[in-house]
Length: 252
Length: 376
Image (tube, rainbow over the protein chains, first blue to last red):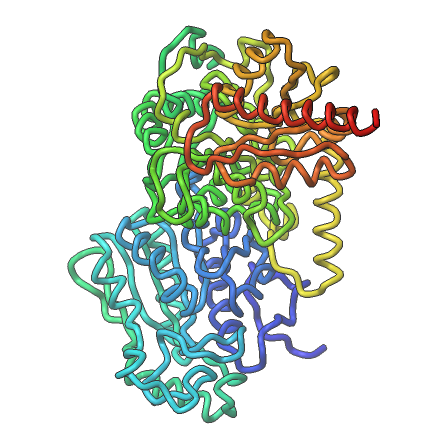
C-alpha cells in the first residue's frame, strides 16, 4: 500500500484530484483552510462561498455546504447569509480580480461595516481563468495579455495593496493579514486566526495569500517560486496588519 | 401563536407603507436595500416595523449588493426581499439571474420610475421589459403587476408564497404613483383568512455533519458542458411552462361581444376600466383585458379573446413594452392592434375614450366605404 499524504478531514475525497492546474496556489491554500476548519471543529457550521475565476473550481472541493456565486459577488452573498443566520461561519473565497476590482465596492463596504465574515483572497497578480490579463495586483513591468509590454504604473497604476487598504478602513475587531503559499505555517496561522475572529464575533477578517499561476506566468517550478519570493515580496509584505487588541502579535 | 400578527383593519396608506406591512404579513424575515426613489419608504417603514416584529434590515452599498445579499438570505433559508427602481433595477438583474439559475425564491418589489437612465423619479411603466426579461437567460421568473393598494398588499403576500412554492425569483411591479399615493385598503393576517403561508427552507447551513451524516449541500451556477447547461435550462423552462396555467392571472370584462378590447396593466388599467365603462354606457361594444402576471402572461386567455375580436388597443406608460409581450402571446390573431403609448407619463380615462372612439369611427367609416364600393 502506497503512503498517501495526509489530507484534511473536511476534504471531499470524491472530487479529488482537484481541478486546478499543476503548480497553482489554490490547492495549497484550500488544503490549509481545510486543516484550520478541522482544528477549529466547525465543519458543520461553515458555509463556503467561492467567486468566479479559478476560485470557482472549489465549489465542490470540501465536505462543506458551499455556494458558487458571481464574479466579485461572494462577499455580499456571504454577508446576506451571515446577516440572516449569524450562527453560521461564512467564508468568502476569491481571487484578486474579484476582491479588488469588480467586487471592490463590496470589499470596502463589508470591511467598513465590520461584517462578521471571513474573506480569503488568492493574489496571483493577474486574471488567470480568462487567460492572464492585467489585474489591480500586477507588478510594474510585469507582462500580461493586456499589458504585453509590461505594466506601466504611469498609465495603469501600482499594485493595489489590499490588506493595507482593508486594515485602514476596518473598525476595531477586524483581523487582517497577508500570507503566502510559500510560507505555509504562517498561512495556516493566519487562516485559523481569521476564522477564530469570526467565531468570536469580533468583526471582519481578511487574509490575502500570495499565490502562483505558472500556466499564465509561463514559469517552471523554480521560476514560479522565485517570482513569489523575490518579485511579489517587493510589493506585498507578509504579516499580520491588524488584529483585535492593542498589541499585535508577531506572525509566526 | 403569532396568528394575529396584523389585526384586520381599514387603513389609509401610501403604497410603500403597504408593501412593508405586507412583507410583515407574509412573514418575511429580512430586507436588504439600497436607497432609490420612489421605493425608499418601503425601507423606512420596514426599519420602523422591524424591531416590533423581530425582523432584520441591512442597508447595502448598492443594488448589486442588495440583490446578492437577498440571494444569501434565501440560501440561508430565510424569507428575504429587496426593493428597487430604475437604474437600481438594472443592477438588480445580475443577482436575479443567479436566482433564476439556482431556483432561488427571492422577492423584489419594483416601483417603476421614468427611463432610460436617471430620467424622472416620478412614474412610468418602462421597466416591464427589464423586470420580465432583464437577465442573460430565458426569463424564468414571475412578475405581478399591481393596479391599486389593496393589490399591492395582496400580491406582495402572494409573491412570497409563489416564490417559495415554485422556486422562481418573483417580482411585484408597482410604480411611483402607487408608491407615493395614499389609498384606503384592508390589511390583515393571511392566516386569519384561511390562507397558508409557505415556510422557507434552507439551501445551506443544514443540520448534521456534511460528508458524514449527509452529503454536503453544494450549489453552483456555472456549467462546463453545453449539453449540461442545455439540460438544466430546458428543465427549468419546461417546468415554468407547466406551472404557467396555475400562476398566470388576468382580469377581463366584456371581451365576448366586444368589437374592440383595450389591453393594459398596472395603474393604467384603472383609467382603462373607467373609460371602458363609460364607453359601454354610450353603447359602444368595448371590453378590457388586463394581465396581472406579466411573466408568465396568461397566453391561453390572450389567444382566446384576440382570435374573436376585430381591434385591440394596447395602452401603457411606455413605448410598447407591454405591446411587444402581448403581440408575442397573441401571435396568429388577425385583429388590428392599435396603440396609445405615453412613456413616463400618466394616462387619463378621457384620452383613452377619445382614442377608442377614433379607432371605432375609422372602423365604421371603412365598413361604410366597403359597403358603398361593393354596392357598385
